[in-house]
Image 1 (spheres, one colour):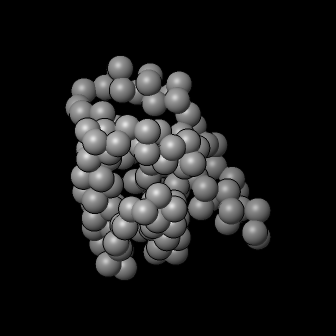
Image 2 (image 1 turned 120 degrees about the vertical axis):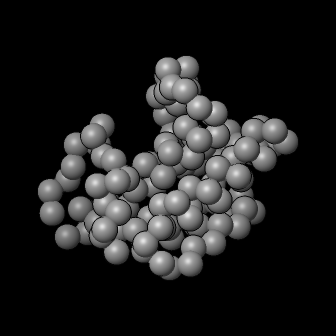
Length: 120
């Protein structure tokens, strides 16, 4: 397995890789649980991205509206780049929660790929 160029990692490229999807879902569940936030994953690979996206988007909307400090702590823990986040929010259409959700899933995928690359 070759390590992908991380600026070009896209979730869509891994939608058919069961192990990667499962590990990414586990990483999301683990990181959100550290902040007392429950994320569920049915285990179904078909529609996994949409399943996680809908949950995370709803969670992030709530945090944006009610607990901004917790949101910032969560994003820091997940290791999202504040600069990249601000750049993407200012240059994209759509709500900030959707952009943050997409970036969270991308970052969690990158963590899984890095771990898998260095494990082999």
